[in-house]
Each structure stands twice: as structure tokens, then as C-alpha cells.
Length: 52
Image (cartoon, rainbow, N blue to C red):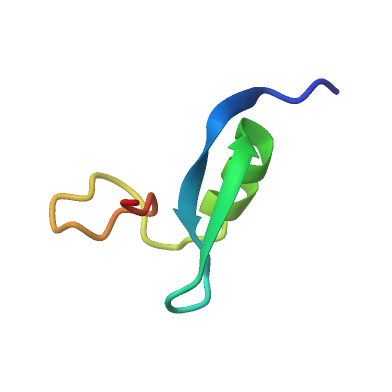
């Protein structure tokens, strides 16, 4: 299956506190985000996407 690449890499929080993983394809980002139990809008600033 083809990967869906993007550049620059996107920082995504991992399940480990304080750990951020820079991913450069949608499949890896999706795998990491699916591990999160808290989903939905991030009005309180707790989004899975980290700010650089």
C-alpha cells in the first residue's frame, strides 16, 4: 500500500508523557493518534498535535 507523505514532518504527541514524535506520513500519524483514548475537538488545548 502506498504511503501518503507530507513535508515538513508533523509533531505528534505519543502516549508517553512529554514525548513527541515527528511523523512524515499519514499512516504513521494515524497509528499514533489511534492509541489515544481522548478524542474529539481540543478546545481545552490538549490536542494530540503538538505545537512546535
